[in-house]
Length: 117
Image (cartoon, rainbow, N blue to C red; front, side, top):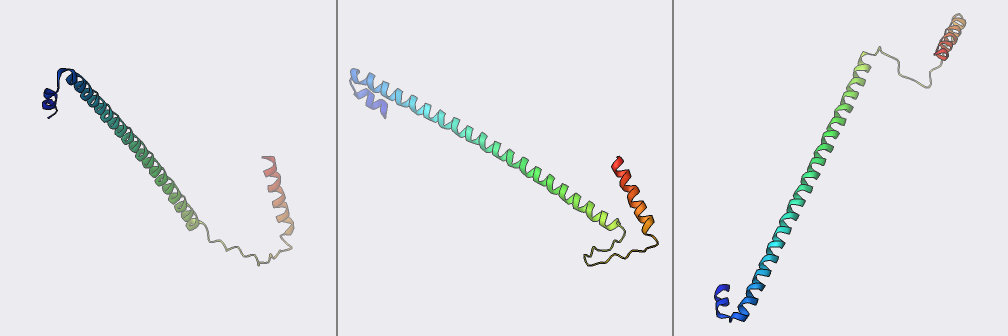
């Protein structure tokens, strides 16, 4: 349709119209190329964000696995630990006077060994 319009124009107007059409065509191509480049850039950014999210999710799963393993080890240690009496703040210590000196010696000797290390 635009070619028929150009044929109807005189020679002096035809050249200016062709140049205007060419300029508009070039501008449209440039805009299309810029839009395509922008779309590619956005897609790269989306891919980078998705990769970062995948790494974070993997790290979180690894942390959860470590936590689960630690809890399992604690449960195993508790299961294999000889039955210990629960700590009761209201318990009273009964001292056997016959063992008093030997226990003091044992505690003192252990303290000296620990300080030596």
